[in-house]
Length: 234
Length: 265
Image (cartoon, rainbow over the protein chains, first blue to last red):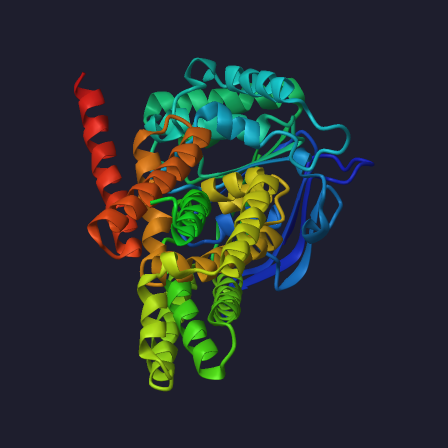
């Protein structure tokens, strides 16, 4: 079932999957998934563990290649995509992945600056200024010089959101961004995503199993079951 | 001590490798591939043995074996990332097996022994020159790829969508690791080089308050361990490779203690 969201526009949609199949080894986990997310839309993918929702997000950003079907990112094959400044991606990250990582929040956001951007390279001062600005937008500028391994789960997710937003992307892909967060952190993160979407007409592709996140962000909701999109709700 | 040319060569090689091995090791440790040093050093031992049997330069044999080993590990990592630990362990086993078999054909067993535990004080000018070139290549690669390696150390998946050509960077980095391990096997020894890839990095991680500091402190710990190890081995008549590693461990204990003191203050 191909699911079209919103009104088609002249520009290529940020995310487009046509009859996509994907297998881990011999086991096919997606069976002909179709999905188009237009500019400025919020699309949430929900489903049980193992239903294939994260795989859809990973295919959308080219992290995985489909075994059949077509994936387009802003109208281009993700394998040959070069405009990564248009894409902000926050994949799942196990807590132990940052437990030894010796970098400050500012260093991390700075490193994501200029991803795939064409044109002149930014000076160190400009990078610092823009990184601090990105951290300020997620309310983390006061923690810029703190080590990321010392941040709480909610603070770390906000820093990762700043990394994803620092280049002013047109598409934000979030894979279970509220996993392990308490209520306050979850609400703060949802509020940040909602306000960024409203300000910049940002396209958001969200993978979640948390109904409370769906309620606070709105947009379209796709239910995935056994590797198929079985329902769409607005 | 410095009036002897063998000590001058040994110090130059030791200090260079002391600075460069942890610089490479920082990325290796952050990417949870600490066993790669072990695997490649054992592969290098097989290369050394092959070189000694074949009558060619043992260091050249070590370089070839390490490059082949790193290509195998990277090949498996590309096909199945979750199998990368297994790939590292298999290369380690293959290296041990090949070295064990080939050692039976080595004409002079003591020459192989010098590569197992290092022989930094018997290096020729050409060998020191090779180390200088490899260290320069490693430092330049580390500088050119610093942003990519930093992002990949944090999260390879996010790095990919930050425009990092992950496959190419991985390959280039693995080649550099292979070269560094191969030339270091002659100095600190095949069985010890992986320790120098991890222990000084642990010192840096213990004390650093940023990525830049962690890299600098790791290299500094490596340099200090090499210098102290060489001086101690000269005056106490100890084997240099093992002494360098024990100095690195001592520095790590100092780092642990100073961090604990700082917390308590």
